[in-house]
Image (cartoon, rainbow, N blue to C red; front, side, top):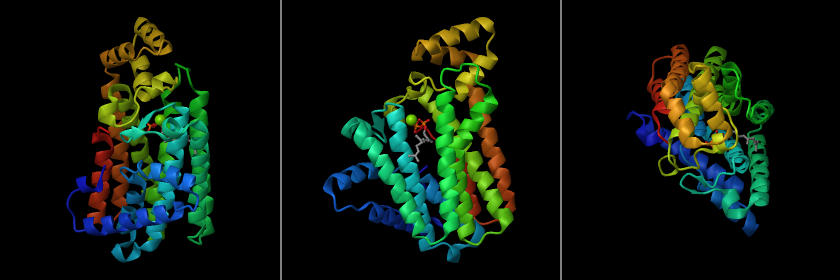
Length: 327
Ligand code: FPP
Ligand code: MG
């Protein structure tokens, strides 16, 4: 969801200016006098894509407090959020044994496992170093909790591997933890930094969390259906690593006993082509897209707490883009 795809509003130059500031903060934080470290950090800068989390923090701030309330603190906050996100991607690609991200080689594929583990650690400590420079201990406390929840989501996902009868509710909780909480925190902290009222701040968190869940649902559909060239990252990793995803869980719900047994056999054999065919035959892909659309709708309802504004329109567009994207 590049910012360029948003509806042309008078806010676009301001959002872009703040994002340039986010990138500056990000690069300054990662600047290292040690050439091997600097080289690895440059690799991660290639991962930068949609900048969803910093953009959301900025736009939430604009919606909650107006342009005068969104300045250099939002730029630093945006860089902190992006650093946390980058750390999780570097570690996620290790866990998924993925070779490709954003159309290029992953850190683990290019520099090996040990360097990737350590770079993820470097990024997460850089995030909290930069966060502490905002001088607000409550932000450190909050983002520390959020990062812990994110790891808990990944641990629950590990624990649920190969549990083919995983209930939909448990799966959605994993998606909320691994993706929803950080996007929710981006929206909440962005609004709070801009002086938003407690009601608005709560609504923005609920908005971010819901679009985060929808984003992850779409991600899982793309992992099952997309090609590496289209999506720009390794696909089929969920199945290869025994991760249960919404299309699979719904396909099992929608199948009769024989269909479910066939699907389970194909999942256990990691037979991606058969899984794709069987899942599609049940209508589970449409059902997964419907579930994602329902989360987007619940996110949009939260926007009623905001005064009408261009920023609110941008948030509407961001919510819609989460499920219309193909990469
Ligand atoms: C993407 O999953 C992964 C996440 C949203 C969270 C990853 C978090 C960790 C690995 C915990 C490590 C945490 C720290 C703080 C370093 P995906 O594989 O479904 O998405 P993808 O398609 O983009 O790979
Ligand atoms: Mg992955």
